[in-house]
Length: 263
Image (cartoon, rainbow, N blue to C red; front, side):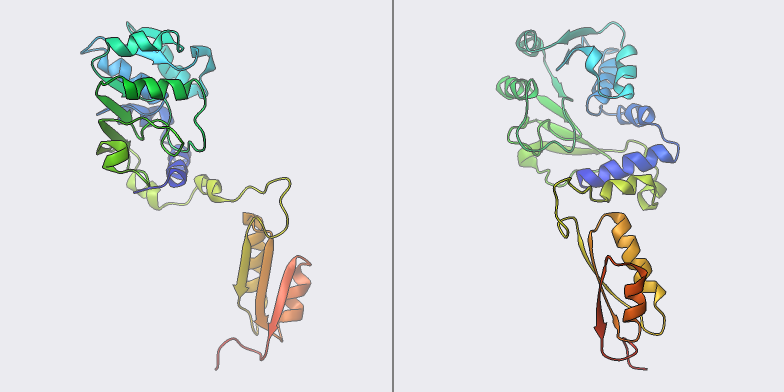
């Protein structure tokens, strides 16, 4: 399984190494689509074999990403509806509901119009296929699908009880990207809150040094650069004054002796 954060890292790294989000959306549609923009790709492919209606949660001028907007513009001969005033009738007419409202990362309380749409889907009695995760997954209200097609890998917390039958679809992220560090790793760095106090954004203890003093200091600077705001360095007494001199932000704890290990 993979967490929502790890999936965002992969997406960004894939884009950095030349795999476009649009390509990932198209690859996902070998079996099904992805959230939002990928749901539109699903509609385009399914419309070749069936009558498809696309129900947008919000007007089409409110797409959050250029990829979703591009896929909307590629739709042809598909009925487009938007808003809650048309949702009940559209859901009642459907034989299969493809849930592509929300993706990974949702939390807390589900907002409108998504909350009402999720309730309508759950009350429909129709088979539901969720894309990547059931919409609302991780919030107080989620879709209860018949099946979920998880993109790249199942997400942490998914079970047959909350996601139905889980199928994993390869969306074309090269295997080497999963083991390569790229700009996606910046997603993992903590973002300090404006009102936070020292120590609330990460506490780090560095143990090192001895005859040489650079290593523990460099590790300390790295921790501060990554977002931690409280760095303790434990180092032999002979190195402690030098390490402390590198930065007033270091809290240095001298150890007895000249080395961490016996010679």
